[in-house]
Image 1 (tube, rainbow, N blue to C red):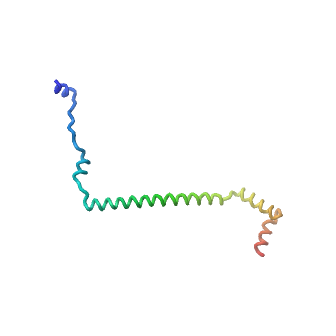
Image 2: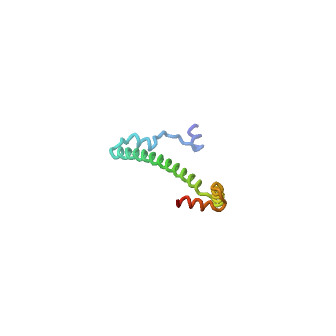
Image 3: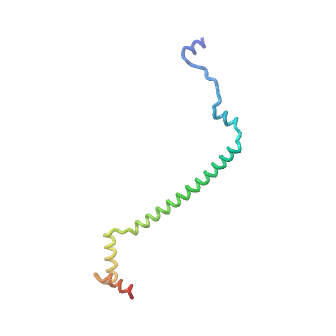
Length: 106
């Protein structure tokens, strides 16, 4: 009756099989070509890690430079205020630049 019930329900008995990957891994021993490729792969992985570290360092330097440059780029309004303050420190309203020019020429 069991056979009839199994046939009626459409169930099949599973036979254990080895996967193809397992059979290939067991059957193959590393050849010289495979060893060469594996050593090449290891070397490429090391180079990739080195390049990734270098890229991260360069990206950090670039970000620092961008921040520094953005600090140097003053808006015209800020620049005018800075010039006005420097003129006041030199002791005159309109002759601040003239005073600077005289100091540079002498």
